[in-house]
Amino acid sequence: MSGQAAGPEPAWCRLHPLSPVVRSGHGVLAVLAVVGVSSSTAAGHGWFDLAMPVAAAGAAALAAVIGWLVTRWRLEGLTLRIETGLLRRDSRQLPVARIQAVDVVRPFLARALGLAELRVRLAGSDDADGRLAYLTEQAAMDLRAQLLAAHHGLDPATPEPAERIALTVPAGRLAGSVLLSTSGAACVAVIVGLILSVVSPIGVAAVAGTLGWWLVSFVPLAWRRVSAQYGFTVAQSPDGIRIRRGLLGTVAETIPVPRVQAMRMVEPLLWRPMGWCRLEVDVAGSPGRDSADGGGRMRKALLPVGHPDEAAFLLRMVAGSAAPALSRPPRRACWKAPLSYHNLAAGHDGMVAVSVTGRLRRVTTWVPLAKAQSVRLVQGPLQRRLALATVHLDAAGQVRAEFRERPQAQARLLVHELAALSRNARRQGVVVQAASVASPVNAAQSEA
Image: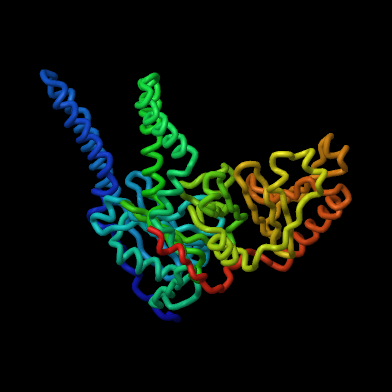
């Protein structure tokens, strides 16, 4: 026989033995709470009334244990294999060459037990292709480092490269942004109304009822946002932009820069006196709980609340260059857009198109020309009378850069220019690349 015998196959690994506790813990606790309430309020009822929720909790726990028993994984050279299933076996092979990102998620119960979930995303996928829930935190971090090292053609034993912290959102600023949101402002207005009604008792009941309704709806939303975005930290790494966030449960996710389709800086009206803004990125085929547009694109917060100079720094990290110079539409455009004319501006260079729109809330949109899907000119009846037109540069989903209310001749030239620049950007492979820039001095880090 010619050739040498192949080496032994790597051993199969199982998830942590406490994984079933985490997977079924929330459901079991909810059922036990229902049982506790029922037993205290349903005196004289038969045991059967309490047996059903207990049986449901037992079934959930049993399903979690079976799921743990039939799940195994191993790293076979350049492929991560995950097998699961009891009656129908499901074997997933995840080539490390196609890995787009590896995220580490720690829900509250898993974090309390020192566990973490590993989520592997492949290029061209709209969801996490492989999930290992749960491993010890150290095992999850070690496996993540092995997968990323193999993806970059390095020895799997190569330690993960150090990340560079870009900025951190202070907790006080995050809480203030929630209070200055529309719901928060309405809640504050109702509280002020209640205080005023104490002086003049007329309408106390109506104001108190409105206050109660707003508190019931606003407090859970405010807590959810503060808890999810607490400790928001952005770091720069070779595999993309890393984000860590969370109070009770933590999330460590990576945004691959080449998958960024567009960026948006939003400046709500109530935030402007504080000089705050929010920076969002549209990521192709990215899972998560941020807003989605239903077109295989997820909008993620790259900066939940910050100052414009922080947003500009992050934009340079993602876009690789500073924003181009912007120009405003002619004065006659105020007849077409009287409420938004003061915000309208747009510009472009060879890499990106930028537009500013909005009436009360100012929105600045960046669309990389290499990601443009189409360029179109729109001209309504009033625009024709004013010799104006609007040029749309469409990216994936519903995001677009708008050159609104431009002179008609300029708009027609702009369509051909943007189309040519977009073709050239795609031909040369000018995609969004992370730039190596120095972190600015963030004086706001000291905010409470």
